[in-house]
Image (cartoon, rainbow, N blue to C red):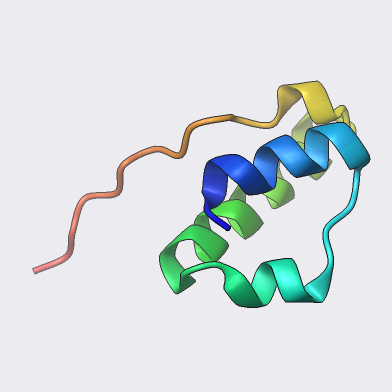
Length: 61
């Protein structure tokens, strides 16, 4: 499962299993959890306001 699929699942069902989290790469999981924090704080849990595409991070050197 990748970031986009996880967001789609959350928008459709409102939940994810721990196995779904386990299947995600560390980078996608980190991005998804950051998005969930913003979503819960600023969007009042409205699943339509989750970002469907993850933002590209600048790599640290």
